[in-house]
Amino acid sequence: MTGEVTKSKPLIIAHRGASALAPENTMAAFRLAKQLGADGIELDVMLSADEKLVVIHDLSLARTTNGQGKVSEMRWNQLKILDAGSKFNARFAGEPLPLLGQVFEELGGQFLINVELKNYATPFDHLTEKVIALIQKMRLKDSVLLSSFLPRNLRKAERLDPSIKRGLLRLPRLSRFPYSVWLDRRYHYDALHPYFEDVTPKMIYHQHAQNKEVNVWTVDKDEDLLRMKEFGVDMIICNDPAHAREIIGAA
Image (cartoon, rainbow, N blue to C red):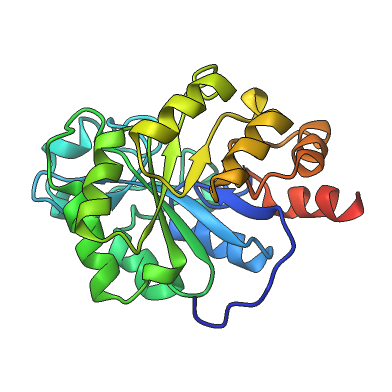
């Protein structure tokens, strides 16, 4: 990563940007996360109808924008004019949806960017290939982490470019220790991304013994932040990176 320095763990990763303070998955949230000293951001990406890499979490546009319908059924020239800020707060009116390339262009290499591959409804599309091609084009292999709940995406990513780190997301209750042993044998990943309530010291010991990180989501309460630090997790994904930094730093 350009300009990388040694940082103490756990690293603080802003979930969909500083999404407690700005509209999620927008440049406003990503810029704010950087300003607040986050070690990185987590974001979601999926394909539009014309296969543009759109940064958004939901399949539907309704929750976070003034649009309607599915992202996958709309072209970028329709998506780029939507307001992705007003529903969070009127002062963000007019904040657009970004493309992954825009995020990389402005913030790539400055801190970690955890890209969640969100093609769960269309698992056989070209999302993984397109994201990897963009990472390679922009020379960001060392500062991007790909994550997904879909192991198929990680297997494909490993075939295409094994030098790009991969994180396996696990749903609550599915990432506890015995299940993780089975995962180790079946899938190749660099980090396990469990729901924080499932994490135990034993899980962390096992993953670290396999040279894998444990990056937990999504942690915001003081007592949970402190417990994750005490357990020795590698990254904490949170909605308010400034608050997390304050709590972690004071411990």
